[in-house]
Image (cartoon, rainbow, N blue to C red):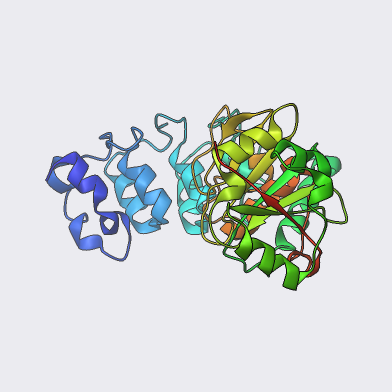
Length: 321
């Protein structure tokens, strides 16, 4: 079996299917061998799957405990971001360095101190002290994130910051005075009768602007995002309930399209770290909660599901070009 074939057999890295790997390194794939995916090792993959028994076996075969993959992540980093406490314990007992910088200067231990794994690290020698202000900021973001727990809308939505509601409408090529707020009955009729696609535009009580569409992806269409943010402003949006990605535009330019569970890197936005992007299991927040929290954090725009359906909105025709 080739390295690439073995790398794709997920069950091979789980304790639930040990027969494939326990007798000897499979197919000559020794514990120090580099796998095709990001230059990781078998120990990385076992850590991602939380396979504490397999980790012990690989270490007994002579696997290095702290190898870095192409991103700089160690097996301990992977065990932390996937939330596997047993794997963390085994790696720490084997001498894995909790304070070794891995991604963007961050160590596995530092990441863990903001998760439910904190008790495994807080009393270790060299543990950094998390200042009360930083802890308060993260707690505030987490609280805002969890406030989206009941969000259940499948449509496309974008939040806009730094631009007024009237200016958004003007940038979309419409006249604000011709797009007055309307109630539900008029809303559906106007959308149905329009010869072109329309956007719902509204300003929530706390500030910012919300663009949404019950069918289609107009709020994050390149043309819309470019028009709305050109000349100043930021837009962040997507399909929070069904997609793990968020489109981010600033000043008329697409700056990022991060995915919730994608490994972060040295160039990742600070807000991604605060909203638990890159965390695959160490924090109980959902993909939807993280995406909406990021959208709020970037734009200072916050909504409730009840407001989305009850607030008068403005129907803006948009001709794509």
